[in-house]
Image (cartoon, one colour):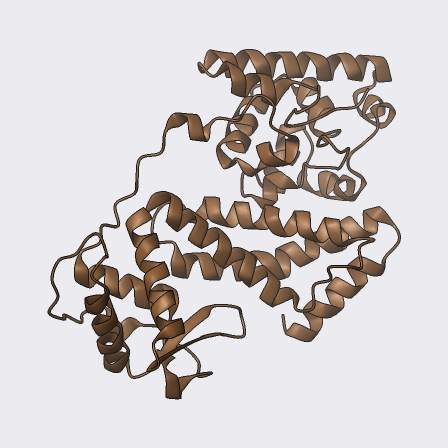
Length: 348
C-alpha cells in the first residue's frame, strides 16, 4: 500500500460517522497497512522470542491512538506509515531496554556519538528508522548490514560498553567497511558483537508478568500472556457459555474487543467461529455486528435475555476458578470480574 492510499484510508476512517463502519475501516488499516509494516520492522530489530509480543503490543498502541483520533483535531497524524513505524521502533527499543540493559546502554551511546561527532550524522529514513553514517552520506538509504556478518575487528572485550573511545573507533571502522549508511539498530548490534556485549535474555520476575489488581482493561489487554491464558480457558467453557461471553465481549469502556484476539494472533476468526459453534462463513457475516445484545444472543440460543446474562455470569465464574487453579488468584480475578478494572466487561 502506498503513502497516498494510507492517508486516504486514514481520512475516510476519521470522517465516517457510523461507528460500525469506522471500526470496519480501522480493521482494514490494521490488517493491510499496520500489521505488515510492524512485522517487517520487528523482525529486523528483535532477534529473540519476543517478536510476537512486540508486534501485539505495537498493534494495541496503534489501535488506541487511531480510536482516540476520532473527534480529536489538536493532535493529528500527518503521515500514517511514519507514525506506525515510530510506534514500532519505540516498542522494540523498550523491549531492548527491558531484556538487554547493556545492549540498551550501548545503543544510546552509539546514537549520542552519531549525533555529536563531527565526522558522523544521524537521520531518519522514510519509514522512521534512525540511520547512521558519515556526514557526507547524510540522507542516503541504509544498507541492510549483511556485509558486517563476518567482519572481525580488533577490540578489547568490553561487556560494560563503557570504553567510549573504542566504541567511537569501531563505529567509524564498521561504517567504512560497509561503505554505506546503516540503521542505528544494525550498527549498534555490530558493535555489541565486536566488544562482547551479551545478548542473553534477562530474567524477568514473575511479578512483572502478573496483572495488577487495580489495573484497567486497556493495560490488561496489553499483556500478551493474559490474552493467551484467557483464550485457552474460554475454549474449555460449555458451548452456550462461550457464545454468551464472546459475542458480547467488551472492554471497560464498552468498546467491542473480540477483534483483539485475531489482531494479536491469539486466535484466528475461524478459530473463534468454531468456539461459538458456527461455520466460518456464517460467523464472518456476524462479525461486523459485534458485540451483540443479549436479545440477539438469546435468539441464537433460543433462550431469554435473562438466561443469556446467567450464562455469561457462569462463564465468568468458571474462568475465575480455572485461573485460580493455575495458582494465580489475582490474574483470575481480573480476567473473570465484571467490576471496575476488569479485563473484559459484559453488560447486563
